[in-house]
Image 1 (cartoon, helix red, strand yellow):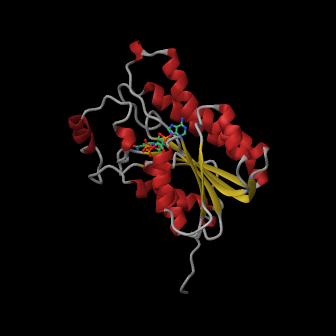
Image 2 (cartoon, protein in one colour):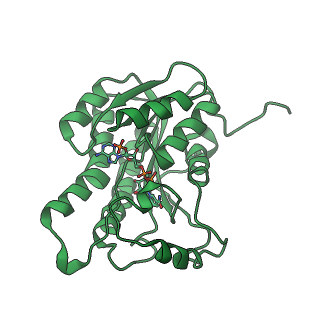
Image 3 (cartoon, helix red, strand yellow):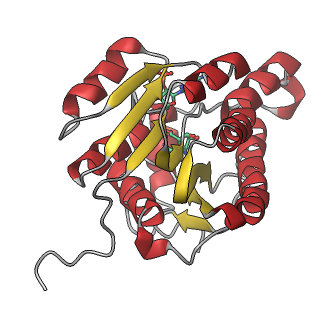
Length: 250
Ligand SMILES: NC(=O)c1ccc[n+]([C@@H]2O[C@H](COP(=O)([O-])OP(=O)(O)OC[C@H]3O[C@@H](n4cnc5c(N)ncnc54)[C@H](OP(=O)(O)O)[C@@H]3O)[C@@H](O)[C@H]2O)c1
């Protein structure tokens, strides 16, 4: 049957946070190739415009917002029409040893990686922005869920909390026809690997050897799984944390 595709996203509208780079940019572009109208958001105007220019098809929207600020989250949600999917992806990495933790830094990482996911979900639900059915995908991590790393305590905890929240959201939102799942990703080649972390190029090369499939992930490896979770092909799946890590945690 030519044209048969249970993974189709044709005609859906999907909001993607963290769309100015890496996994979010790639997901937005891949979704647009599948007939999605995407609403992309991030802080950096130039980089978000680059993503916007790379989208296929018509009817897309871009909105500048800092998702670590709850007022900006509320404004962002108010400015959009109804959606069929939400890729809750914006996040920052951070490495520090326990003895050197600073409260402000813990707060910054949790505001961006964790509080934002809860508040975005809250406002989208409260302001009735989801069509029925809809799907939410949160980008969590293998970090501290399946494997711990020196210096990864704050970031890892912020991502464990995402999985924890996702399960409750899945339960509460199922009656509204909204599915919630997350992705626990291993290392993916994006800017996050070098922004805000103290990991050297040599350490990355050494770490790559621990991946049985012989490489770090590409943004497409995660984007295509997100597409599955957004599509009706996963319509009996909710509350699941999907691990994608090149075999790292086997
Ligand atoms: N790459 C990996 O190895 C990996 C592994 C596991 C999980 N993840 C998770 O996957 C997600 C995407 O990561 P990535 O690797 O694609 O990172 P990336 O290339 O650094 O992109 C991060 C995105 O988040 C946005 N962002 C950060 N802080 C923001 C804020 N306060 N407000 C609005 N947007 C903000 C950035 O946009 P602006 O700077 O323009 O605001 C950017 O678009 C993150 O949640 C990350 O924790 C990544």
